[in-house]
Amino acid sequence: VGTGKFCQDGGCLALFLNRYDVFYVFKPELGGSWVEFMGGTSAPTISPAPTYDGGCDNPHNMHLDKCYKKKHTRKATAVAWDSLGSVGQLSIFLIAFMSSTLTISIFL
Image (cartoon, rainbow, N blue to C red):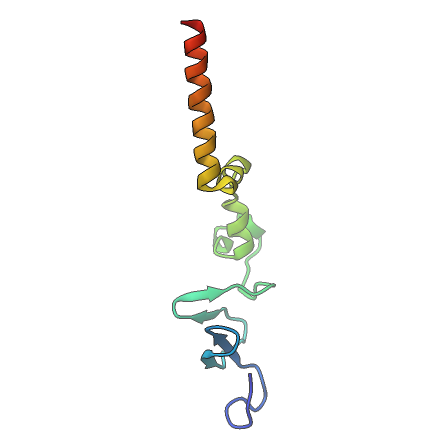
């Protein structure tokens, strides 16, 4: 986004409501800082945040996106369970219930 009056040297950002309607246009100071808008942050591809020696083992680096993702990885079972959705989860519960009642009725 840029015009002759507002953004002469480029570097402006626009947030759109849909494909055509501009919600907000601003020119951030991208000198090594995160882009923040309405309380949210947008992580860049390469984090410009300052880092300390020691990588993710150093407590000063725990706020970096790479270290946060490394520390808070989700287990594969949780990802698989969430990927089923509510219908798939209900189906699993119904199948387990029906198989347990069938097993009980056969052996009683």
